[in-house]
Image (cartoon, rainbow, N blue to C red):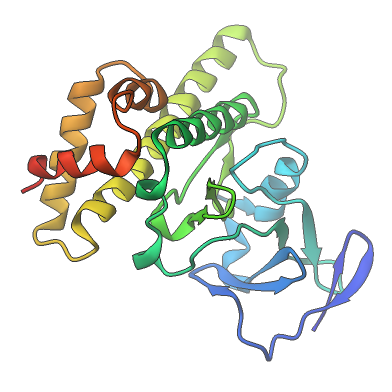
Length: 248
């Protein structure tokens, strides 16, 4: 089928197996780009056409949160989806054990970048969503922890003309929620490495790990907390294994 991207007509062979398929649509790989094509029933969400949110995200310079770089239209110029740079890594959720493979300093460095990305999205009034293992990719070659699929990210405000008080309240709320979602993702990834994806009473054990880290780190960010806790460990995996006692 033909689509319009950046004013040019392109062809996507939809008879071929997509690189990914989810509840919103399917993804095709062309070169080093991913083309996400939505099901018609998924174009509208939160009461508006998703193209409005996706257009707003183009050009925001996040480093490891992969955002749209162009919109995709049908030949009649109705919205079809968006294009992003590819995130290299293992597709199978049961093999995404990148966190435990990293040296401690590299793990902390990744956390700092991801937290910075969340702050940048907050600055632009964007509330993230769907931060879960299926949308996490680890590039082993470059040692990068990446987050993909911003399809459900929501722009809470498109302009900066409100009062400073209202602006501050909104940004504080967005920042709190964005960082909380990132921390939840990191905790799940640590947990998955510990239990090798075959847990018993998984929800209860995951909550035990969340509670332990939350209490232990107090008001610190995850990068601050792990920078401190990993300073005597050469690699993150050795420390993560020590957390196993908290989820038995």
